[in-house]
Image 1 (cartoon, rainbow, N blue to C red):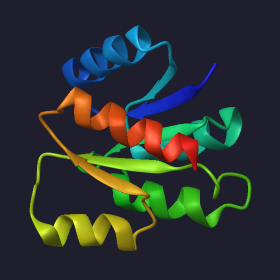
Image 2: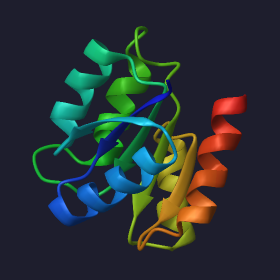
Image 3: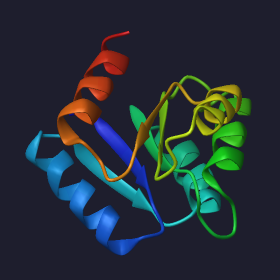
Length: 121
């Protein structure tokens, strides 16, 4: 089974995304901030990470950088999720090491298409 690490500090977003992912038969592990995401990614080695961009303690960009810098986790694809839809945010996420970028509120059909495309690589 494919495991996705879902990182979001908002309980409602995390719960809603978890339910949708489970309906698509993904196993879901959650984290509430970037620091926790870095730790869980190294321990669990998920197949993919969905990373919120704006979080307390450590934001999604810094967590992405740390995950991609670690030889144990560098191979894990990361999709940044953000409420910001400006080209500068997308460029910043990609430059920080994410594999893709998607916006909130989440368009599930589009997000699942991105997940499938990344996992087929």
